[in-house]
Length: 124
Image (cartoon, rainbow, N blue to C red; front, side, top):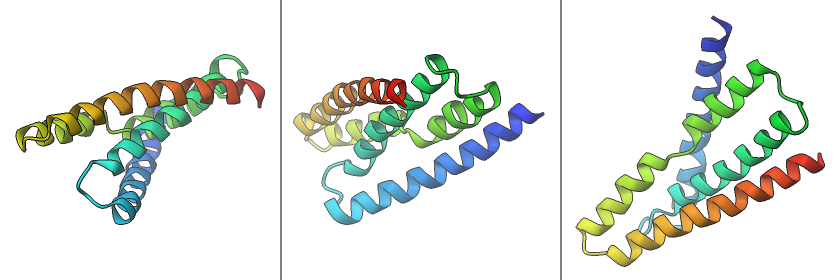
């Protein structure tokens, strides 16, 4: 039961954080490119990198905290399916270069920030 409560709390927090961050980014950058989703995805990779290092290298996260933060929060916060949906929308609107740029930057920069997050988590 505690696991499900952690998933619910983490998922709700991640969903709200995603909504607020993406909305903030879209307000600043506009909506002609999926900047909000991009920022959410790469920052989610960074956060998950830190949490991963804290859990696996530093043993600083209990099983319950892993469920709450890594599965609940990060699972609801990151929006990979939205990345694919918005990229497909760009393709359908004749903007294939923007679509593939969005996918490429999200995946490559996300991986780089994940590794930086792991290194930062190991330092903590």
